[in-house]
Length: 333
Image (cartoon, rainbow, N blue to C red; front, side):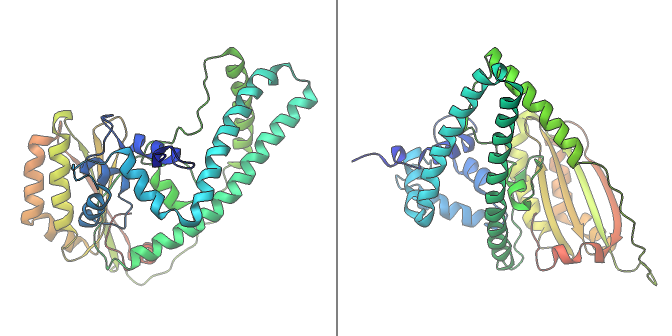
């Protein structure tokens, strides 16, 4: 019987496995699984239960066969899509390689056709992405509402520009290399140089600065304000694992404190820098939390884990500015 990981459509999950396997040991630990598959909906306990379900060999690690088997059972109507994506990836790679060789020698008119065709491929895929993104946003927003305000812990890398909010947040994970085209040939460099020039021109046209009139908000007082807190943390390389453990403990405790609206952590790829964002219902409630045992314990542990003292900044803003986006959700974004 053909191994599930070699079946049509499974190569994408092999790519997923590669991206999740941070230390390249060909297996996913529970920490790697939590870090990659945390989606802002499942909490740590949920992720651990899912990990155990996928780990059918009971080795406390997940291999490629186990990951592919789990998703293969749940593909349903998406099986044909994932099989088609394999064909599209192969076709895109072939087309770009061929274009790289032939484009520089084409006539001016033929080069225009190539640019148009490439741009239209982008437009068609973009239209599909918008439809899929809208459906994904709806499902995840609905799932978040049903979580009863439980704090979800995950780490984000810098966002990559995207029209889909949830898709953009997911780019904290490494980008897929399903479509891989070598860049080592002179013709390839020449082709992409011209494509980049075209893209720069399009970007300049699409991203012209537009200044909209600022609406004037007339209020009687500033009593209804929330406190935004940003804490920049530079962790010593040798303390990364210990810091993450303490951070999770702190987030779980802070999320239960009175007045905590939102907690979010962002980590930056290739560095040991973290930023912890907190939103509190009032300055008084935040100060009360800051003096709590959980907060003090976190700050004490940071003495050993950080390369330099944390940088904390705070600002009060009108609660109405964010009330719509955070209502009913006491977790990370």
